[in-house]
Length: 139
Image 1: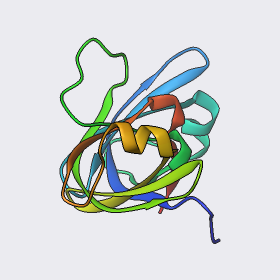
Image 2: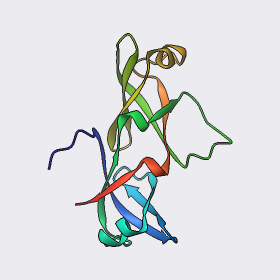
Image 3: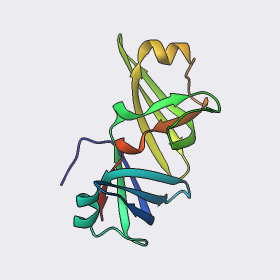
Image 4: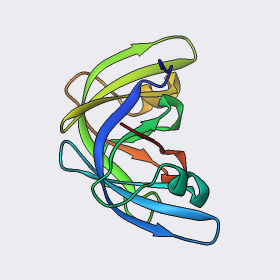
């Protein structure tokens, strides 16, 4: 199956915490970072997720926010430090590629935000992703 989702990160499940309707799944990415996905409990059961399960974390580029420094006081758990490798700006939107340890992410942000953050190749950034925006696929 081919997907339009550019951000596909390989990893291994390290923990599953089932809740009434949702489950949180901790994934250790191939680069060593930890990522949390909040998915339905039914999905976690159907995928037979358990510690040691190989997965691919999927995140749409529109669901990635970028920060140029440390962010405190924020509920977003997934914070992946990286370096800008490319910026393609249009009139309204910009596509920003970010190298994180072991992978590359693409973030779709407004052109205004890219300009305000002075994003350019080589700039350090932190990619922020809400756990509810991470989907998982077994490999």
